Image 1 (cartoon, rainbow, N blue to C red):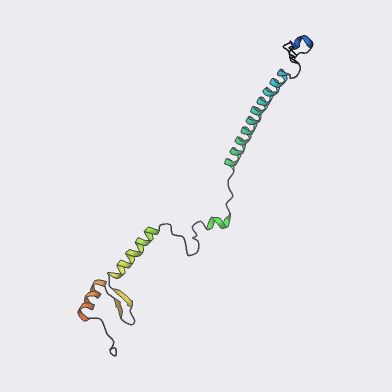
Image 2 (image 1 turned 30 degrees about the vertical axis):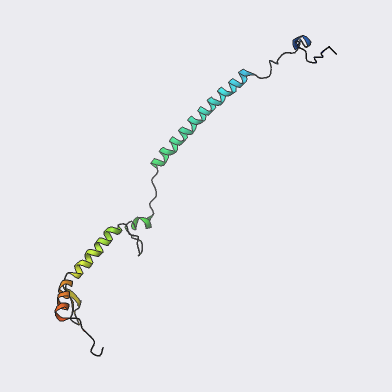
Length: 140
């Protein structure tokens, strides 16, 4: 019992299998390097060919004149039908207000045949104060 059994005693594996070494023919390094260089060269060549092709297409497109259609050439200034979108809503509102102010502050005919006229709003308010508002005769 005093003897201790050591199954994995320290011993050199090289002594047991002297012919075993790592394999030196697994990978062909020069073949891989040549393949990588060939891949890079072909990528640069393809890039150059595509660049030349695009430059050719660009110059060909620059020389090409777009055909003008006869119906479209005559309608360059044609406006779309009403109602149109406002391009300057603030300016349109200012124009409307200026037109309304001009109507409210000027004399003009409403209907010439019946003799109805328009007077400035200030004059109309003065006349209402002087004459009073009309009232109904039968109202109590």
